[in-house]
Image (tube, rainbow, N blue to C red; front, side):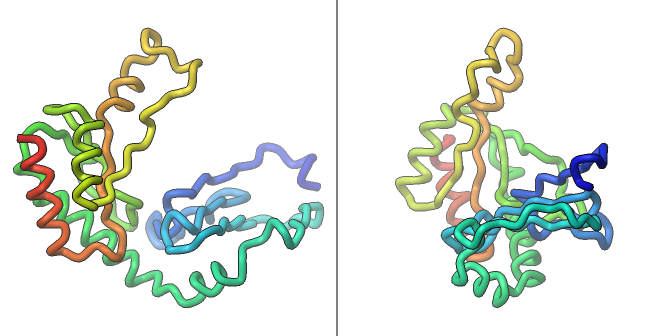
Length: 195
C-alpha cells in the first residue's frame, strides 16, 4: 500500500506545467507530480495530481475539491506546444534585450532546452526593487514581486543571501499573451525607470 512504500518522490511542478527534461515531461520522474494550472493558463482554479505508480490505496477526491468544468475545458483546448514555444521565445527575446540594461543581474545565464519558464526573473541592483515594481505596475506591464516577505525562521543574520534575494528579485511577464513589440516597450520603460 501507499503508506508502506518508502521512499516516495513527489515532484513539485507548480511552475513548470509545460517543461521537459530531454523528451520526458517534468512530473513524470517521481511517484507523483503536482501541477498548478492557473499559473500557466487563464483559469480561476486548477491543480493536477499526476500519479506515476500503481497503487490501489490512493484516496479519492470529493467532487467539491476537483477542478471546475471551465478549467478542464481550457486545458483541453490549450495548444500546449504553441504556448511553450511562445513563452520560450519571449524569454529569449527579453534576455537578449535586457543584456544591455545596466543596474540589473540576470538570474539565470541561459534557458535550458526543454524548460518553459513561468516568467523572467532578474535582480534589481541599481534601484529599490519595490519602486521599480510600482512604476512598471503603473504602466500596466504586470511585473511580479515574489518572496518580498520571508517567514520569521529565515532570519537576516543567518540567511543573508535569502534576504538579499527577497529585496532584489523581480519577475517580468513572458506569458503567451505578451507580444514581441510589448517586450520592447517593457524593456524601454524598465531602462527609463532604472536610469
